[in-house]
Image 1 (tube, protein in one colour):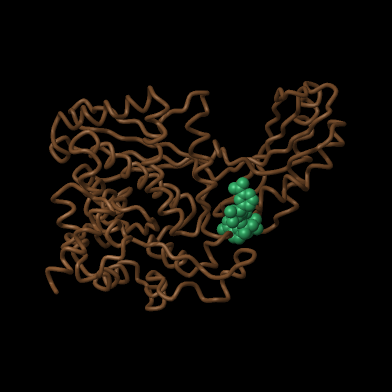
Image 2 (cartoon, helix red, strand yellow):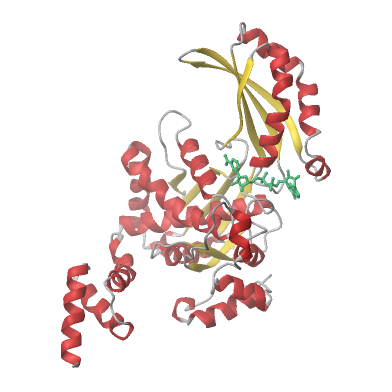
Amino acid sequence: MGRTSRIEGFYKLSMSERLKIVKEFGDLTSEEALALTGFGGLDPSIPDKMIENAVGSFALPLGIAVNFTINGRDYLIPMAVEEPSVVAAASNAAKMARDKGGFWTSSTPPVMIGQVQITGVKDPSRAKHLLLAKKDAVLELANKQDPMLIKLGGGARDLEVRVVQGQRGPMVVVHLLVDVRDAMGANAVNTMAEAVAPMLEDITGGQVRLRILSNLATHRLARAHAVWAKESIGGDEVVDGIIDAFLFADADPFRCATHNKGIMNGIDAIILATGNDTRAIEAGAHSYAARTGQYKPLTVFEKTPEGDLAGTIEIPMAVGLIGGATKVHPTARACIKLLGVKGASELGEVAAAVGLAQNFAALRALATVGIQKGHMKLHAKNIAASVGCPEELLDEVCEIMVSEKKIRMDRAQEIIEDLKNRKR
Ligand code: NAD
């Protein structure tokens, strides 16, 4: 039994008290703990190495979700996010899941798809046959590009060939399936796709156009499952309310977009905190949700025979522990160390569990008191701060706005003026 992530009253502590707990939990050095605070921004030499035309760095709040148990192990989850309530909701959902053992996860091998588009092929069916017959030679050439990946047990594994109808006629699309181990894999796969292109042209007699990774990573899925005991979440009525909320998303794309957005609130926050590519994960998630032709929820909620609530998520998860910003960004490095994940698949599974927790929390709030209750306090803080509320009046202004249920800039300004006049 390792350390516990069940930390009562974490939210009531000061930032420095929380950091002390996190530092101990993750065995972080003082330098790593300092990196988590992000104070002072990135070392000036780093942004210029990461992107073009850099002028500085952009800070976001980093919060720590507590209470997560995943496959019997406790995790503290770093979340970089600008939206209030996300970290609290994830922590609360994870707390309620503990009664039934927390989250259980699995994933498929880290196989990404590299696409090569071939146009102008006279006989696409014959080309498909020829490509599959020469599969070994294509894979061998692909694998020559990345000796490091091969040494680590990864590499190009298989070839799929599709004939896709375009408006200017059929095109042959080759999928190179590559096991990218602990990388997100875009660079690795793109290099291979570009390298095999001339060979594919020779085999098919067509013209290669695009050679690029697909973010619809259907071979690289992460899954998470949890059961929430009905007594822990408010009883039968709440279980039924959450199932009805899920069924609404299942039947209606307008609701489903927001259902899946709620999942991504949690997933993007951990993806960003670990220096991974949020756009890749978003693109993968939404295209996977629409893979049947109808946009569907990424989670499923059902009632167990005992009347408890069972939740499941399945989502493409192209995350890496090497490459991209994961090794270059000091805060991302410290976040990965805090998570203590051994490989990219474990990170993907943790992210899936966070997405499921986040979705559960949103549906529970929607099915009961509504989402605004939890949002109000921090929302009020944001509104008050945005109209320049002095620090010493902040709590009072927020309290008044929340009690009046009038969380608006004009009201914040009035209250600030009022309080200032009274204190003069
Ligand atoms: P990368 O090229 O920096 O690292 C991958 C390489 O690291 C592998 O090819 C391998 O040679 C080596 N390696 C060392 N240890 C490894 C290990 N344990 N497991 C696997 N490989 C190991 O990074 P990448 O993951 O190929 O590319 C990720 C970057 O590509 C991200 O920054 C992403 O934003 C960007 N990108 C994304 C897209 C897209 O999503 N469509 C397109 C282009 C680029």
